Length: 121
Image (cartoon, rainbow, N blue to C red):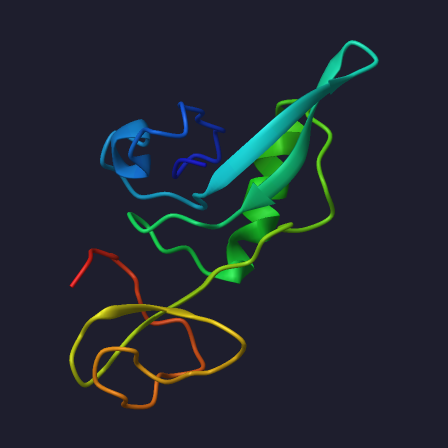
């Protein structure tokens, strides 16, 4: 979802930042679609984007864009990715199993989202 809330789609092998024209976004991630009764619907959706590292709170923007496009969708992300940047070493982390510890330097990660302007490393 670009900054205007417009749904932008590209093949999975594409970079999200390129799909969004390098601009800011309200949400980013991956979607799978299926056809049902002649209509396309979202079967899976995640916020998995290491280009933008969107917080889970981006779901309403995703849902709004899908609603505006007339595409049925789940009630939330079917696969949630929790991104955090380590305040000590600045590396990007994906938090798994609620273990808020940096995999690079073993320092504690914040529980609040902190990766605005996400870029690796």
